[in-house]
Image (cartoon, rainbow, N blue to C red; front, side):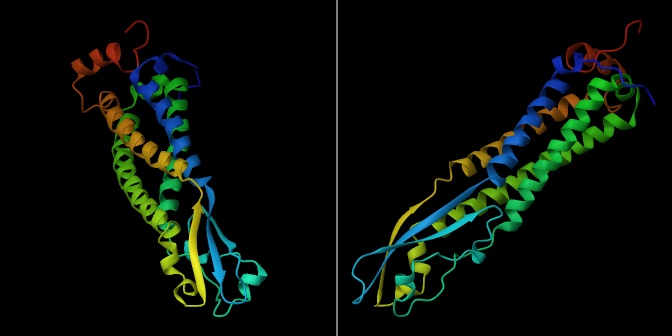
Length: 240
């Protein structure tokens, strides 16, 4: 096996430069989703004993098992007739965890690939298996970015519905004549919207980089492969 020799030239070429972009994009993808915490707030009034409204809150976040999140209510609200422990609706952990876990694996793979590109340039260039493995992984990752991001985008839409104004219609207490509920607010989900954007951005980056990885494989003709080293691939060693 070739010894480690630092060579930063691949980072100046599309193959290495795009991999750096993929690395950064994967960080933003799992950080904006996995780090989210928020809450939804509702104003509750129960008559005739209590005339003033009280605020009840439900704190939620990644991995978005909303059906395990209950509303935190003041004691005087809990004393209202017909008050029952209320929880949010829905479990979106599978989509959220799939998205975040995949993004973390991509992050780790980018580190390994960059280490190979800049530390074992000759080994990568001379091997037939390594570029082919890299190419297959790139195609699979592109597809999984599409699947995971689409699933997460659908789950995010449902999360917004489950924590938004329609939440009042789902609470048992709010349906009784002894309780009146009004939706107050919900924490902004801007970072979650950004996570979806970065998911599709990752898909574009990986799909575009598939061409440059393909040019390093033996599927490319020898003459074209030689030209690719001068245009976008890893350059050949001196003397060749």
